[in-house]
Length: 127
Image (cartoon, rainbow, N blue to C red; front, top):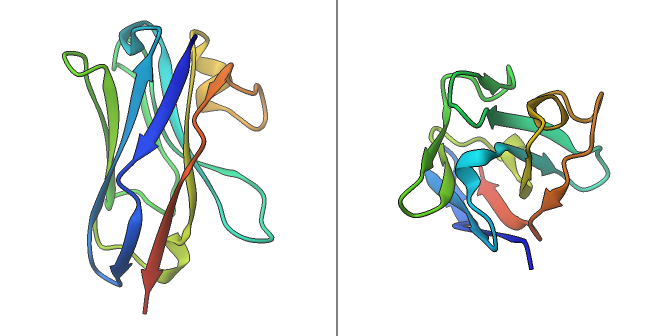
């Protein structure tokens, strides 16, 4: 069974940091493009960051550029999202997703959705 599991969410004060991890079971992430997305209450799910399977394409939403970093650890079969300088508007449920097609991951929701999704992890940033 192919699964993605997010971890690392929590409550943090404005300006703080969190590191989210997306762990895979049943498949190896180094063959897949991975994306991080978030959905705040009453809002559409939006793309946050993505990384291609070969790491030669990395995308960040303008709202997180310079604050968030996506990276992959093939030895641990995980992809992380380091989030620094967090703001209250970063509060959302964060999801990771994977697909062999980088377009489905890095242009979602215009194209996609990616094939595999985690269950999400809550990030709350207090002011």
